[in-house]
Amino acid sequence: VSVRIVDPASAIVYQQDNVPAQWTRPTTEWQPGELVVDFYSWQLEQECHDCQVALLVYDEATLGPLTATTSMGEVVGPVVGLQPLPR
Image (cartoon, rainbow, N blue to C red):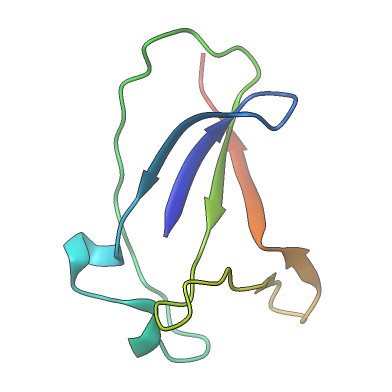
């Protein structure tokens, strides 16, 4: 899983890549519809106005990005914007 902070131009300001749940839940073990909870923290070296948290999930076996979909099956892309950073 890649958790990213991206600026308004989608440039990566910060990136942290980990196997979820403190390296215990590789994506090869996930089941469709399963909720996998993970926690990340970061300390930015500079202010990032209007930046956003984004998420990219990789297939552990192929290292290729997985395509994210909504519960209705709508494709939202491999990189999913989550929320703006609080000011």
